[in-house]
Image (cartoon, rainbow, N blue to C red; front, side, top):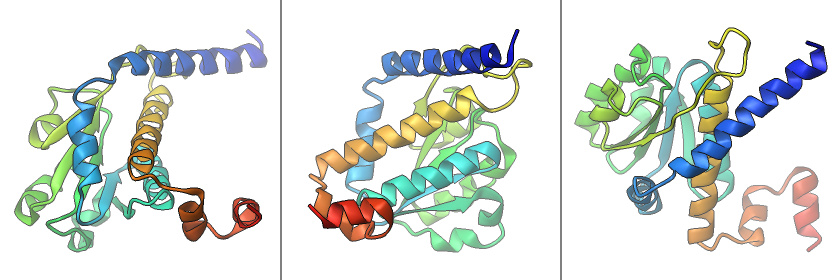
Length: 196
């Protein structure tokens, strides 16, 4: 196989997973959107590893489209950053397996704080999914790397779920270009919006 074939194969695997994800979106998303839309506090996204990197992007997308949000690394959470979370916040907890120890370690404190918890995981029967108030689960056939273990397909799926949630909230709140410009005055996007 040539290098281009490797690249095409990886893209095809991830594209197929996204097409399958479209079929998995169902009624379980509706209460999640309702909770996020009616959140009186902030949306907090947490995870570790590749899930953490995806969580940072999700928080940025929420924030730039009108939903106050920030990322909290799960390990930092149990070392004091849980103090940033309040009762009226909603916490999106990302773990592909649903058994990530660092993410699970947040659960007792979050329960006492009273924040709503939403799991994003591939395992609907996992400790995380069953401990959270809501759970968004996804399924995929394989990761895109040749040994099938590197978070590739799974992390792309979570990124797409995050984008979809942010866009849905944006549309439900009738978020405008003017609103976007308020939060994004810099760069080429800011210049483009200031000319409209």
